[in-house]
Length: 140
Image 1 (cartoon, rainbow, N blue to C red):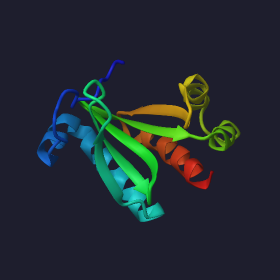
Image 2 (cartoon, helix red, strand yellow):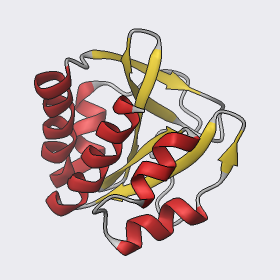
Image 3 (cartoon, one colour):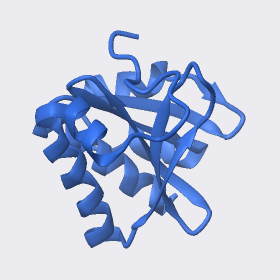
Image 4 (cartoon, rainbow, N blue to C red):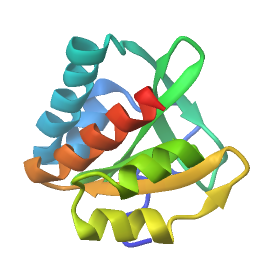
């Protein structure tokens, strides 16, 4: 992985200051994405989780008990991760998503709970496929 989670091995979730310093210029994109989810889809339920010392911390955005998106902070960027069920994968493949994103879905690891899609966010244009996949997930 070219961009590992910046908070691997930490025993507590990052503070706002640590997160801001780590994300750098992409902190604005992080905030923009979270605000978009809250405004457009009412997804304001957030919690920091750590699924093991080797994975680091991620911010999970949820609707009730359903996890929609995981945001993993990296140095100067962040990783947006979604787990898509079979119906969502089918809809995504038939959508207007770019071929590189569709290829990413096709090559994504399969888990019992679905297909794990990870998109590295470094610039504003990287937010569009994250939003589109999240909308597909919400609908399916």
